[in-house]
Image (cartoon, rainbow, N blue to C red; front, side, top):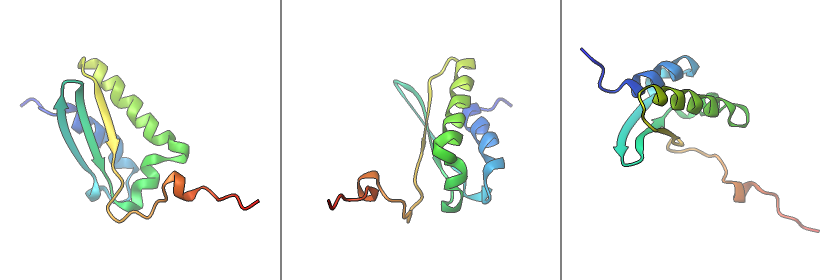
Length: 100
């Protein structure tokens, strides 16, 4: 039987070894006129592992998926959603105010 969602399976195979809580991995797929869109959710504890230092791990995952899409002649995009209850600061909130 042929896998109807090879990009989801491939993405999961890349991400599962990175996670402390693999049961928290969710991948939702949608297709529009621009290609395949994958939305990834992981547990809050695993966000740092998925993003990596300065976003290097996330960028590597995106590069691998883009290459995989090339094999199937598809454009594949990934969005990594912040977990519910995340306390990460937004850039404009975390910038120090100048008091000079």
